[in-house]
Length: 469
Ligand code: GDG
Image 1 (cartoon, rainbow, N blue to C red):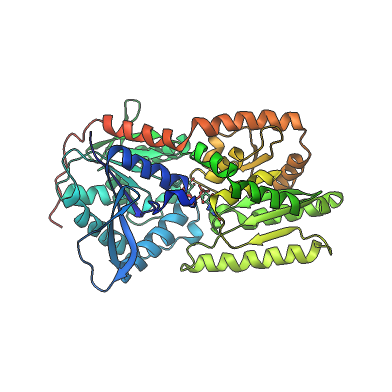
Image 2 (image 1 turned 45 degrees about the horizontal axis):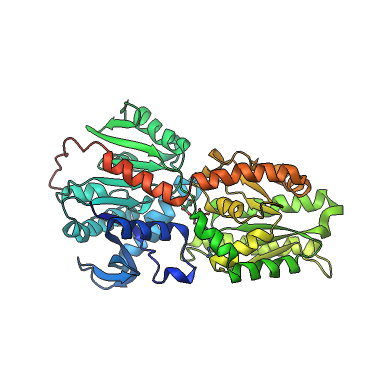
């Protein structure tokens, strides 16, 4: 049996899986690493004065992790810079927020080459290598340069952008070319895969070969759709745990005679939080008789606070939530409870279950796991209604949700009203269809399908010859 080497910018293998705080993705990949044996490789989160090409090993609940320290300049240019200020906004269609700094691109290439230098000697001949996300697109190329011929797969957790936007990136061709050093590239949806294919065919003049193959730059790669999901049983356990049940009771008591609408999102401009609040404000304006019967609980942990765009949006959201509360609140009612904090997974499950409406309205999102968690947490006999952005990858599978255009405050407002007034029979019918999707896309299925496809991907026929440079 081959070993599996999982590679991601941050290693999220839980130290104590029983603590219940780890996400489904971390649990699924940790379980895969126990099943296939292997290791999880990535940045330690630490900085050092001078980079050393060596990994520190740790055992985390039976999973070996190999961690690399980076220099502060690498973190600035590669992580905060190219990954989070260039690729993240661009891949979410925010060209207006994209930084086109040469030093970021150089830092990205340098840091990926450093990862390759540490990782290559750890690889054994039959190992399968599975690299995650936009931080590490050039890593297969850098490993090939060091003579690694193993099967290497890549999974993109974000959307792939439209060709017309991707070409605004200096060196876009170089970025895409480096993806052809993988054997398999996985996307969440057919839409993201089709956008990638469109670039390859229309911009780089490549060809589609067979059902899942692309040929370009003198090389071939397999592509595929692997929709990620949640660890359904793990999530149901969290929901049914003592803390999950207690949180549900607490929320139900605090909502008495009122319907709760819930939103749970990292603080990120891709999640459409400002537009969501404006849509909710429109609903309050248009439906004065429903005002005191409803409130929005928006759980928004702060993320990437080192990046100034994130500080800006944080300020704007504070102001918007404050303004709406100031305008509409009454002595015993506040329309928005806006919380910049995190909760444990079991608490979140209890919160979702107590909410009559799940509001998941990103402007663009690779998949969106909150939509699936909200559905999984519902009471089958009295389920809540999911309102879902048509621009989330999840919309490709979850068509029974109330699909909305998150840019339109009027559509958001109408959808909130429809969700709050939907008859029980319709809520149950929709929930049953959605729950089937949640089960059919369990994270273990995603993981096993990808690993199987990587194992059977045709081998890179001929390795490219690189210039010494
Ligand atoms: C990227 C892609 C893709 C949130 N607040 C708390 C908390 N969370 C958890 C949620 C959910 C996860 O974080 C967020 O996942 P999403 O999928 O919604 O979004 P991203 O973080 O942007 O993830 C996305 C995903 O990768 C997987 O491929 O779906 O499109 O952008 O699980 O529950 N968890 C806890 N406390 C919180 O306060 N414990």
